[in-house]
Structures are given as C-alpha cells and as structure tokens.
Image (cartoon, rainbow over all chains, first blue to last red; front, side):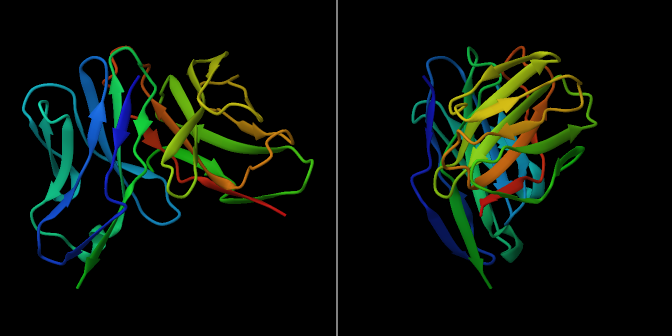
Length: 114
Length: 115
C-alpha cells in the first residue's frame, strides 16, 4: 500500500522569504513522487517529479524538491516566495506496482503575504 | 490545464437525477482518470481507463459510471445512487502507464452542486 502525508494544513510566509512545503510518503518499493499546485476553482498544475537520479529536482516557476530516502520525505522548496505562489499544493506518490494510481496528500494551503 | 477540457464548469443536480460530466483531451493520451476532490481530503480516484473500451474502478466508484468509446473522451455519469455528490470533479490524462513514471495532466474541473 502507498500513502502520503502533508503534515501542515497551511503554511504562512512573507514575500521574499524561503518557502518549504513538507511531504512524507510510504511505499513498498521505489517511489515515484510528484508535486502539483492548484489555484482556486482550477485544475491541478504539474510542478515537478522525482523518478530516479539526483535527489534535488528542479521544476516550474522556480520550485524545487529534495528527495530524502532515509527520511522518506519529498519537501517542496522555493528560495524566495512570491504573493502569486499563494495556492493549494499537493504531494502525490506512486510505486512501481501501482502503475497509473496516484495517491494524493490532503494538500497544504500556502499563503504568501506582501 | 493544457489540452484537457471539462464541461460544464458548474453543474446542478436534482434529487434522483443522473448527470454526466464531460472530459475531452487532444494530447493523444491513452490513459484517462476521474478524481473527486473534497475540502481537506485531497483527490480520490473514481475510475480510470488505460485504453479505449476498457476501464477499472478506483477507490470510490460506487454511484458513478463511465464509458470510453473514443480515445479523446471519458465521460463520467453521477447516478442517483451517489448520495453525496457535491464535490469538485477533476479529469486527468497521461501516456499509457507502463513504468509508473508517467505524469498525469489535469483539466480545469467541474463543480457539482445538489439542488
């Protein structure tokens, strides 16, 4: 079975400060990890994914994520947050045996204040 | 939201009524998915289809039905058996899943409300 946890319902950060959104996962085999962002009343937009290779993955809009196998984590980061980064962020995981079935976390609301 | 369209944007259902949500993609993707989103619960998989004329139940299929007669289209019907249909419904597509590495791309969603 696969599962993913986003321990924070909301993250508040001032514009220009670093942003981190946390994600931990549990899978039976090698994990495939994804981050998506959702703006109000819109669909999900793909940000980045980890499949294999470098533990630091770079994605869209200046976001990056660090894969940590020992801590089973895949935290999303941005060095300098913008007000426009305010949105709902979802982490998702899939293991190699689950082909198309993604397991999503509950989401973390990010609020960036000017 | 790319090449995936969902219609309508808002849909109202009366008691005992079946309603159908449309999902069309022009990405030439083999696989398509339907998710339900409720506040604070993330996304839950309703149905998925790897290829035309084939589909499987996801985690919460009860009260829903689908068809996949064309590669581009994967409509979802919310039947009267679904007692709590109010939610935001998201359609997604991907290349045919073979390794687990495939990225799913999402449509803009349909919000279903019960009158």
